[in-house]
Length: 95
Image (cartoon, rainbow, N blue to C red; front, side):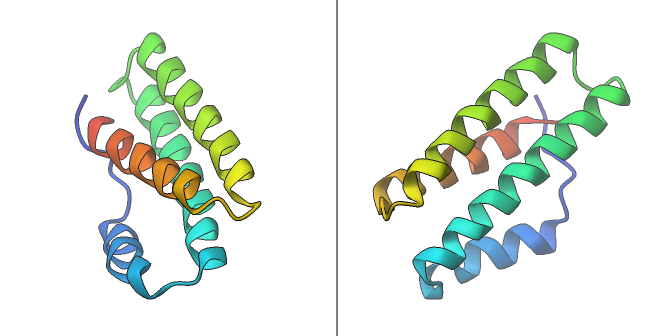
């Protein structure tokens, strides 16, 4: 899969600012990134850049990362970091 066409300024701001953000801000950024990845995957699927199987895979991954984010909301910094890493990796791999 190729890179998502997510607004790069959003991703740059997210990644550059993570070190200075509070836990709650990082968590919100995680939820925002999850939505962005899902939206980009839907657009890619509709444009024919993803197969049905690939679209399903992206949606399953974002469903799982949403659960990680929900669990991280209890204060689990490691879970939050894992969710962000997964989302950033899938973002790079989705057209």
